[in-house]
Length: 207
Image (cartoon, rainbow, N blue to C red; front, side, top):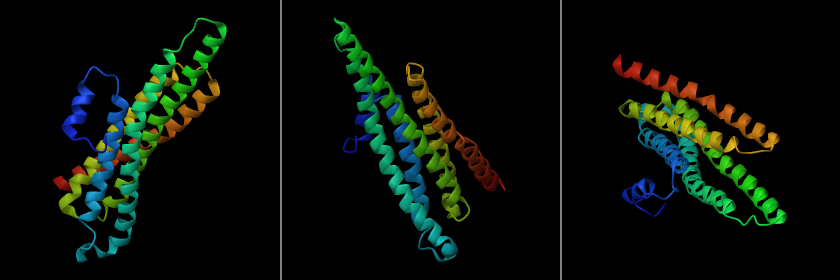
């Protein structure tokens, strides 16, 4: 998906094929949020008026670029993980041995299919926090883009959470379910900060 056009990717998303799907869309949303943070940094760095925030902006830019690439990779990984679950369900089940192998493959696939959107949720949470870091010192001409970055990341976080949850219900290992659910709940705490960022930006714009 790194080399395809947006139009081509959206056509694939709209097709009857199950992948890419919502999980990949969540990854792209997280990547867009990170890209917007990068844009804000790039339009603030080097301006004498914002010199006191230069160090923070440069650090945030490097982090945003890393998160953008990670989110894109996870968007690709999500399609692969889903395909792995589909393949596992298609394994033969004529004998007890085959049934056991199939069940194990399905469970392994489900854990992986939950782990990828969990990673997307964690990246999205980091993008939200990064949006908060650049809010104070950003060029006011792109202040709204800080809020859009937080909004895109919040959408990615909520979307990824749904994709984790739909796999959790089929995972039989209670320990794995608890581990994944705990990590997801921790990432979801960032939603509060995203809403606060959007509210703060709206307030400043209307002031």
